Image (cartoon, rainbow, N blue to C red; front, side, top):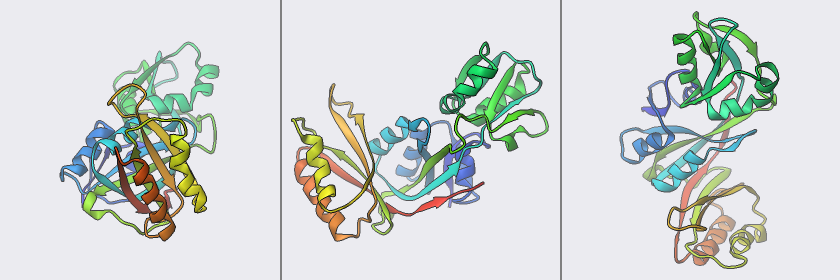
Length: 268
């Protein structure tokens, strides 16, 4: 089974993917990962969907709405950011935009005059630091190797920093068993109380919503797709009843069941 995730080797996505399998390939974008699974080029994809500090990864949400895939697992991994460089003097800190944001306070205090450069992944920033002595990187301390020095560890603004990843699979592997479920709802409608109507079926059945987020549909301004996570399995009668009501409300649009799954914690 081949899994694809954000590359190059050494990203936090790569560390999460190692809990899925040993045959790991890399893509440069989340969209490319989800597309590879949807088209049959890969068996599994591991994509970040939410960080405890910076919130949702919007590219992941949009990719899940664009391609028909199933979510079969959720992986929670702690984030341990370190400052890595060839020497103590540098002009630029390069890393993924979320990593830069997660270390904003540290960088503002310790390196207020250093330029920040957003790259496609934390591992790509480490590569930049290896190639250029004027560049430092933010990444896991183990990615320093023998060429970079760990100048500081645990530089993230909050020690509770963690990232939530989902494992995507072909749609025919969609599961209804698990303690948590994800849905995408496109009402293709707009009226006062629409969001309340979408949420009430879950509240009426005592189903806890762990996340709801809106993303532009791309169809027209002010038109949205809703991503919903609930603490209930799709096999449960109450969940089926709630989704049936939501499907009636979204009759002009669509409802996609991404699947049910369990949550796993990847410590290292």
